[in-house]
Amino acid sequence: ALQGVETANFEFPLLTKTGARVEVLLNATSRRDVEGSVVGVVGIGQDITGRIAQEQEYIRLIDTANAPIFGVDTEGKVTVWNRCAADVTGYTADDTMGHHLVSEFITEDFRASVQEVLDRALQGVETANFEFPLITKNGARVQVLLNATSRRDAEGRVTGM
Image (cartoon, rainbow, N blue to C red; front, side, top):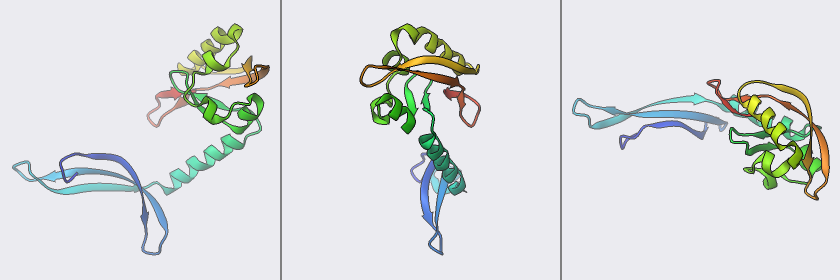
């Protein structure tokens, strides 16, 4: 901000006087004089420690669930692949992240119908108990039930399923 460039949503840790760690979200903008020269910075910080703790708990719950849970972005690429999904399919999260779910992990005979369910979820239409086969790492088919719901950002925009 001192060079005239605004900073938005910059997260960083801050240590308090007592040594406690607080996670801060900072937005900073330049303060200018009448000629437009930068004379300072105006910054607004928000304590997001609680929000980050909630997000980490959410991640732990998904990862340790006793059902396969996976998520995709709006392009159909895998963004979530929990331990149970890995156990059932043999594919680790590293194997799947960023790969297209339908074209790479769904049997050919179900690709169109699974893609339709994903497309509907991305439009906000939920589907419950849709049964289809996933392809395991060793080439076997494993039947799973899909409950497809939209994932949304803070503004309510669909970001995936």
